[in-house]
Length: 217
Length: 111
Image (spheres, chains in turn brown, green):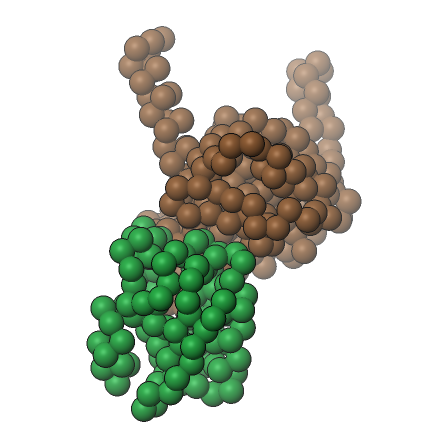
């Protein structure tokens, strides 16, 4: 079973070029942080409400990267909210991304391709080898959005992450994404951690916009 | 978690007591799902004795609502305390399940 970080990476990757879809790492790391928390929540390790995030079960999941953050949250002396933990875990975004990519390569879903740009700059890309999992995720999400079915918690998380990071135009096409916006919003709202990820990102974009107004060049 | 169950007319009413969170959601979820599996077509979740619900609790309700819809049955929630009503509203659960003010309104709504 793929982790949310792995699933969201597959949705972000362009199958042929192996490059990430229009996404700045600065924002992408919050998607990965949210994915980690959502994985811990769906494995009943943490619990959240409108104000706080608590440990429900500190025993390890067996997934190295999840257990690292489960430990961090368990050892935190002061109880913090989801907004705080999304920001904190995002600091390790590169590590989460690299571990998830390694895992996808080991499973034979992606392959590593090393290239040089202008004969000097090393670039690593991840073209898709086996797109079965990714196609299945896209098919499931498209079917869900076009129905009035009640989603399962797993798909709520994926819709929430994909919505926050504006992936639906890429998944279902721009026109469909616009048409399906009310349904996407309805499903996204169902996940409280997803809402926190969205708030962190909104705050980050506001800070960037303020900085641009003050220093436009 | 103490979960009271009664049958009123055609409706099976569940009245859980305490907090609906990661520690208690499984017992609650299993208890309701068991009834859906055995063919209950009308289910009312009376939350008048629930003082707190977390995201884990909401996920349990989502799973129950999905299963009941797939089985062709009806589901409603009633008696939400203010703090629980707030989390239902913020997370948009009021668009997924029908919510009634109290037990009698819930029974009438499922009628």
